[in-house]
Image (cartoon, rainbow, N blue to C red; front, side, top):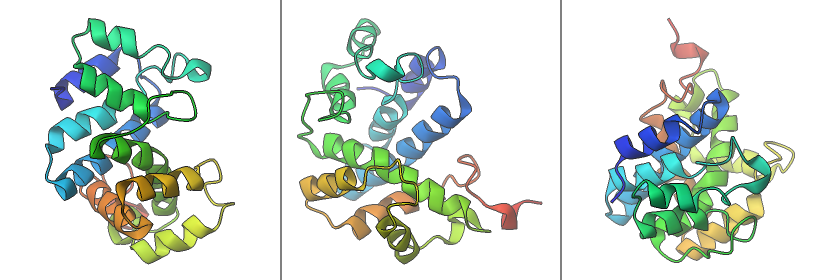
Length: 190
């Protein structure tokens, strides 16, 4: 089973751009919160989140086509590779999310982008971000326009959960790491 330390080590040679590392960390911590919700291994789910965009920086137009083999050669478990591939289902992968882990990653990948954008607009960042504020921004398709809202809603439906509940879990998981995620806001900076 993939550990967070292993995921970070594997990423080290592949992901160097600050915004991509931040995105992976956002997904990592949101996935940890989803794992808690489902009573699963938090660190394992975080590791999957941390490694999900393994090949994106080097191969943005061929995302996930350069993931499977290198991870297999590095000894990553087949189930973990499958989970990573499933987040691109219908976009750049034909691996349909089946487990709660896979469905969560599929949903959280895009969802964290909107949460991050909401938090960046607030003086206190994510620290006082509430779900109702997120939902207001979610409805405005011009806000964080590159985040696929239909995909997020499809993921929530696959999980059998309401958007507000998934968002609340993810916001909570990201709040715990606000400083590291650069989402603590200007109100808390000394």
